Amino acid sequence: MSSASARLLRLFEGHRLTPTQRRIAHCMVRRATDAPFLSSVELAELAGVSQPSVTRFAVALGYDGYPALRRHLRELPAIEGTGGAEGGPQAFPAATAAGNAYQQAVRAEIDNLRHLAELLADPAPVERAARVLAGSPTLPVLGLRAAAAQARGFAYFAAKVHPDVRLLDEGGSMLADRLDAAVRAGSEALLCFALPRHPREVPPALEQARAAGLRIVMVADSAFAPVAHPDDLLLPAAVGTGLAFDTACAPMLLARVLLEAMCDGLPEAQARLEEFDARAAERGLFL
Image (cartoon, rainbow, N blue to C red):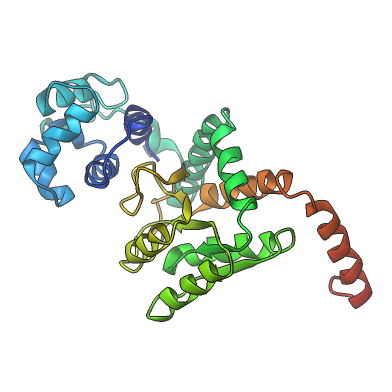
């Protein structure tokens, strides 16, 4: 994530935004260097929303209107001098001296992890989310396509300490059935990994879960994930975009942190781990 994107995230965080407004914010983060130079009409077209929605978005952030927001963006030190339409000096001259593309991708992930560490300075959101997940008798874990690997990894380890974890990593007509089964089994919460590109099956699955009364905990690539709802417990962790395919080191680490916090809310967690270790030794599971 660039410094410009990080600045925008810090500007937007802490505001209760509607799904449409999150979509606008997400678009601006993705186009951070261009954002200060976009008109409200251009931003609306890029985000796929109406021009009045852009105005309401700026007002929701505390500005008199979009022109005031754009003026503020142009004053941010991390965005000044990016050139925009004028082709001025670059704000990040070190980027060209940061090594080859592979090294730059690694360094970008390190920046994502540093940003995650800053967010975790306040552990309350993770601890609150962990209590919700630990208290659910049945715990469905949703992650489709690119997010499936994150969901699968979480479910694998969570099943060692939680009595009933159900992995939902395939879309299609069976997804609704499996959600219904989890609700019948007593589920009170659902963990969703929402990473780009966001599959179109995710929103209806989350709507079904919310309609059934499930509390949604979401690990997403930004605080403005387009599939999120204002009532969700959303934990952001940026993905790397420097390679042909996104990298998800920060979401993976955040998932492990969430697991650690979950263990504190499960009184039998340590006993379950010790029991697993004993059985694994008996069966010779590991070298």
